[in-house]
Image 1: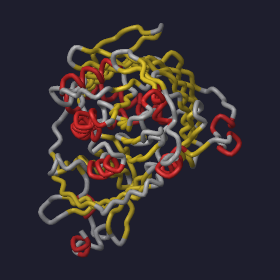
Image 2 (image 1 turned 180 degrees about the horizontal axis):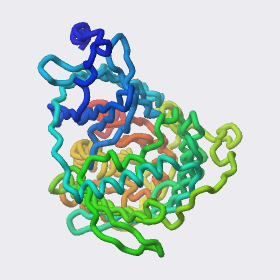
Image 3 (image 1 turned 180 degrees about the vertical axis):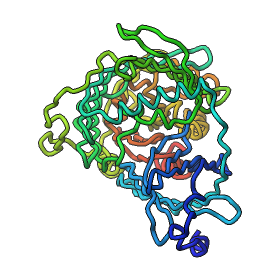
Length: 475
């Protein structure tokens, strides 16, 4: 990559009309690469604005827009996501392609590093839109401008999610209260099937607070709040084909319904209040990503949509010292030291058939805990090795237990489909995962015959795990 950078033109922005070479919609020539998938560059007066999407499932992640600035004559865009900062260079090539060179610096204390990437993009021909699509997009633009111009607002919502795989259909519900104070303060309180959490954006820091365990995660605040909680700000620039699908009253408000056909078969339908241009209902349908995957349908209903409300500034502040709270990431990093050699945190959970399993009653055996989930790709890759350990060690004094926070029906059907026979325990709200300071999935824990933690590792490293099992005399 360094050799490529030496060949880049160093006076691109100084050349008359050279920046026009950047304008347009650019798609990555390697759509399976897992990096940046699309870049849209446009002029806004004297500004050059880049809009970027990164590879995600079920649809690509929308990074939003940022200004390109000249750096040694090369257009550079800096994306401040909070947990990471991405520096990106946009370099037109003589053959008409665009090279996007980018590198990520992580701000989440994870220790991750990125060597950098250079990817080739081809200019796409944008087809003219139909009159119907243009009308729908004009309405979405009004919605986006409404959300971008909010001063102070309260949104209370209920989200219902149905997940279906095979013969199982699981329903979960979350309630959310979002307070927004312009330009960059936000508070989001979430309760439901997962762990209760409070997200606080104070203008410079992002705090994710977990009241039940009195823990927190701290990161730099993203430059743009148009993430998942205020994503309606970006509706006018969203990829996909919108159309007006009908008109309907909802909760006493006259609404226009807009359906958006997104990539990979995903569909979104919005009920937009005709008087305020605020969203009152949002239905999101995701087909299975694979033939054996999970279909997901979520419905968000906004029970309170109120603008102009004034808030106590204290709602947008958090001080862990006052709360005597602990840093969850630090606890996770220290877990191999702070837990290994100490008595394993005790628990009693029910397996997928409803039978209670108590850790204390397994004293005298070596216990392997595998924290996993059907949603976790790395977990799914590790499960065959976990099953092998279960079958080979069952008669040698090894008890293998999966631990999953999902609905038992999902885990049960997944295990049956692939022939996994090791027991899995249902861990509602990730209560046991929190006691073992699990912050990444999968995480593997070994507990010796005396009930002490002997091994704790994020990810799945079969050789290290087998070596630990040998030391404990069960492999």
